[in-house]
Structure formats: structure tokens, C-alpha cells
Length: 185
Image (cartoon, rainbow, N blue to C red; front, side, top):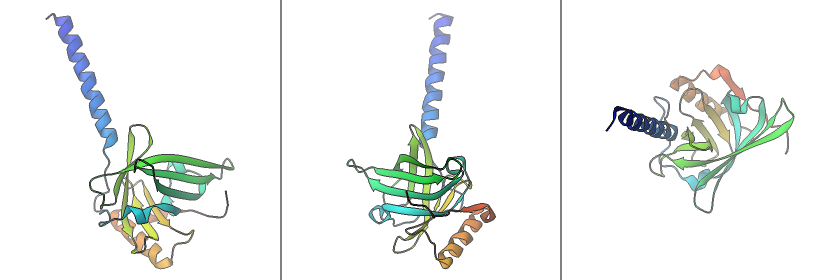
């Protein structure tokens, strides 16, 4: 083989390896240190609409109020995620739909969620009440956290429990945005 041919084959192999690594990295998700996903978890009880009560600010929800997340099953049995909210800056409702897949077994509340092809984020339910009415969800790291409720209100005792747990994990709870729910679509 000529040196040029070896260089081309070596370059092609390096590009392919880099592509595989990027693909796999895009598929992997994590959970903040010290956080433990709910187990046992019952997806059928989690499905339906949740109101966002609080979150850390991040670009996809910037200026958003009246945020809800609705989880349902597709005919193929995949979890469909429909996020909706009112953009206070533009005066328009926005919606984003993605899919969630379990990380590991289906009795552990760890998911990888994708709203864009081949890009995944961690979605970890780390606290939920026995009636599946209030949930504390964290992302891959300390940049993402959501307090969720089946109603636009969160009882004070649950709010305090979620804040204590978030602070224990290292979240700066003074940076939480408390979502208003004052509009109908």
C-alpha cells in the first residue's frame, strides 16, 4: 500500500471513530452527584399533564410562564413529551415535542429525552409523592431542575421538601424561577 493510501484509510478511520464517539456521547445522559431516581416508578401513573411550579432559568424556557409538560404513550409504546408555555416576550404560546426513553429498567425514573435528533438530555425524577401529584425532576447536572405538580399550586410542605432536597444536592435555590399560571390557551 502506498503511503497516500494509508493516510486516506487512517484519516477515514479517525473520522468514523470520532463520529461514533460523538453519536454515543449524544446518547448518554447523567444524573447529579447524590441524586437518586425514584424506584419503584410507575410510568402509567406519571403520564398526563404536569404544571411547572419552579425551574432554573435556561435558554429554552427563558421568559416563559404557564408552562406545562404532558406525557403520553405513542402507538409504538414510546413516551411522547409535549412541553408548552407562554412566551412573555413575544406574547405567543410555544410548544416543543420530544420523546423520552428509559435509561435502564422501566421501574427506575431515569430517562433520556430528545427534542432534537441525536441530542439527548437527562430527565431524572428524584422525588414523587405516593399519589403521583408532585414531582421533583433534575437534569444531567445542577443547571436543570423542575418542581412539578398536577395543579398550578404546590403545597407549602412539598415546596419546602423539594427546596431542601435541591439545596442538599447543591442547587442554588435562590435562583429558582417560580412559574406563574395565569393564562388559558
